[in-house]
Image (cartoon, rainbow, N blue to C red):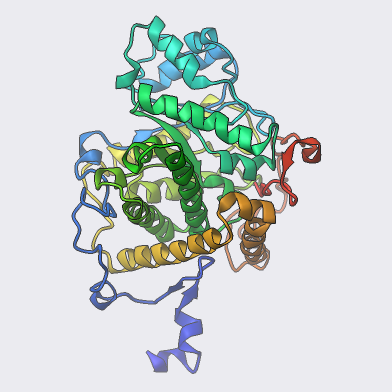
Length: 466
């Protein structure tokens, strides 16, 4: 091997340093994984690296959870009914917000009635991310369930807050932070008693990925956010085994195929260790992971190339073992809701399930020297980064001090520079590009004078690089 390198430095020629700070070796062997604590765990056993349930994909697969954004509630209902017959398995409603111009408005029980008419929420659970200033969707759902004579205690689903992620995304709150937290705590405590199977938090890592964060940074920030929520709820008198089942996470899936597989597996390990440290039971150490294809790497040139990116991202999410999966339409940056792009995105998942038969295997990545080693490195690096944030006082303090912005900016600049210099290849953008192709205009995001708000971040919201 030394002779074949012809004097070129071995490390420079064959090793790869990633944005996560991990060095990838040219070859991996049994020795690389023999000392890993989790390597002998079975699927369905703590720390759940190999999945929460050994038969989940075989029994029911992952939940196909395409986001729905059509603002016309009657049209939305028709779309849901059609797509639920064509493979959709979750009612994922994207709400309209001040910083998100495309989406759905649910202001009353009547709105819910129109949107969900004829939809079986037991067969297709709700998935709604809500902001602190939204209508109390859970209260509307309670009233709707009473109308339908359904028992809300039996209903599984997700109507989840992420106050920290909202603060990072928007850069402000309309009311003082203490009032935001009290409002959310009141809703969550009520939720825990009235609908214990309905998750109240969806901790959103895609906020950080969209700003340019590395995979380990994303995991670290999600963990630190969760720690803040758990500590706050414990102060309200709730125990960890009541708190943990109220939580789910939403993680991005980028184009670094093996890294993203390892990220999903590593997060299950990290979550289990964190809940264990809080004194949680093994059952409480399980976490629902909602995967979503990344935005940072999507192009407004040659839009169809985005299908290739979302295919590998969807693939890595499935191999990693996500519980629900949202594949963005290839043209989502520049076009509002359209049937063709939605169908392509949905079918990318269905092909993996029905034609590639990934619902016939359990943890296909298990035992791979490379992926198992990378899983351990991802977990170690993410945990260390989380500890750094905690030393600064947690996520909210780090955001207000600008620390999170600084960490992400460093990574984002390195990633952008690599694209400009073609160290990272983006087909159709910096390699094999059509010189006559023009970038399409992205859907504009409204700007807000955050300094007119009661609470705002000195450095503003995290940037949206896409």
